[in-house]
Image 1 (cartoon, rainbow, N blue to C red):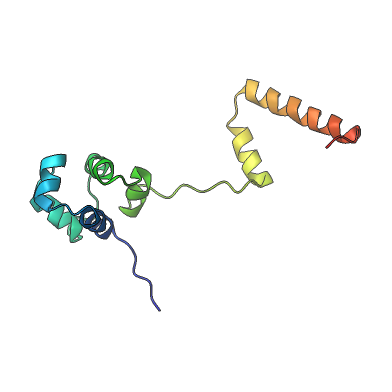
Image 2: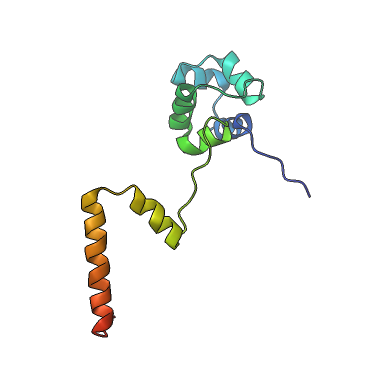
Length: 118
């Protein structure tokens, strides 16, 4: 069974319809013309502006970042998995003060392990 990829148009149309709003009502509330909204929902406009997506995500209470990814404007952020590689990545972007705190905390953890404390 093939899964259909959600397009930004499908996501917006579903959000609008689930709130029982007409294109005209969305136009009034967002300031985006109903003709443009119709083209967007029918995937004639593939990459709307971030400003347009922001207005619609706010109106429809959608996650703006997810909408930007769906529209292909930005790439999906990689989720951190809590692995040692994630730690290395985070540490390389740390300030000197943060790095020192990490070292101090690691020393603390090792000290507790030595004393048999959990």
